[in-house]
Image (cartoon, rainbow, N blue to C red; front, side, top):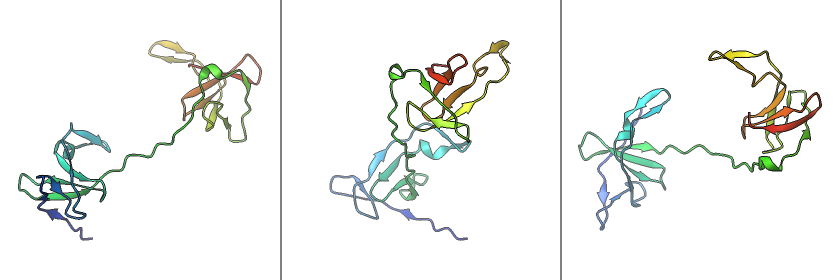
Length: 160
């Protein structure tokens, strides 16, 4: 497999700003930041300044002070889903029943939450951890927990 490497000598416009060799638009200067850890490894390219073209989805970094710039793809930020989460003060005790997958709809965000069966007391850092002793529902989307009220099928939102 042969990889083609694009190296450019960037031109400037009348205002002295670098322009994209692909679309001829003005490049945005982004100063270097601290070393970043990517996939468990140090990413040293983050410390170098770069020139970004958001129209083309690329950025350019200078190669060893040579005046030539290497082209890289801009990383797209992860898409986050907007979730409307109800205020905990608006939640009354409610009847919650698990389905055949041990899940039910979260009353706060509408996503599926998991039923967690009660477990024996565990010792954590020399102390009794009572958090998962009783049955409860846990929503990983909005980080809510709904704990059973006494021995009923009614559950109430809980901070822990």
